[in-house]
Amino acid sequence: MTTPNPAEPLLRVVGLQKHFPVRSGLFRRSGQKVMAVEGVSLEIAAGETLGLVGESGCGKSTLGRVILRLTEPNAGTIAFRGEDITNLRGDRLRARRKEMQIIFQDPYSSLNPRMTVGSIVGEALSIHQLGSRRDRRERVVRLLQEVGLHPDAYGRYPHEFSGGQRQRVGIARALAVEPSFIVCDEPVSALDVSIQAQILNLLMDLQERRGLTYLFISHDLRVVELISDRVAVMYLGRIVELAATTDLYRLPLHPYTTALLSAVPTPDPERKRKRIILAGDVPSPIAPPPGCPFHPRCNHATDICKTILPALTERRPGHLVACHHPQG
Image (cartoon, rainbow, N blue to C red; front, side, top):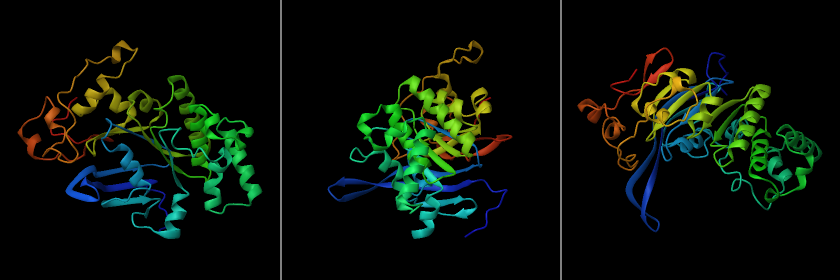
């Protein structure tokens, strides 16, 4: 196993790619591919929250699952604590899985209705054979209390709880094996606004107490601004802008980011932006356009945008953008 380097980020992804074959009929492939993730590179430092935003279908959730090796990448590398985990198998992968967990979007479909809450939260402890049965029960009860649930929840079933309570169960399940990195895949999008705030506060409290690192996936830019240290903007499988949260929200460089932020309501008149309506629809990930993937919808596009893919480059300190004509 690679010895961790203190200077290394907790997670480093380089050139990650994931394509899904398109099936034209029963058990037949058409030869086409859905290019869900295309050459994504990013780093996440220990203890930080990286927000990942973009429209539905841009590849956010797929990227999170590929990073956790729940879905296998077609190309690229994933390094965790300085160790390349892209091709790990068996016990070595299982050991890393303890450190990398996920909180799913839908608290209703992500919990097995036939299992009690105690069994759901304690399942990973049993799989990894951590402690005796009594130890596991005590640990699960402590986890339920830590996420704001009564110990009596241990023997109850998911249908007996509200959406917010179910998501607390999902968070407790993710924490069961003491991970250091958690992918939060739209963890509040299915909840009422008042409950969203409670879950976000819980996630931030847990991060502070446990030193957790988050990849926080969402389409809600207001939520991402609240919880994230840095934000990556994704479009058609690619990262098009990456910056500290304050920098990106104050002065975005990519036209797509500018358009997204223009739609975010704000009570501050000084931060109010002119609404930008993007023309057309997001191109198909089966046949993405040549050059910059955003050029068919961009008011600033020129001939170079239609033929040459812009690289993700640093335009300001810590502020990266993939655009031939960055704004601001």
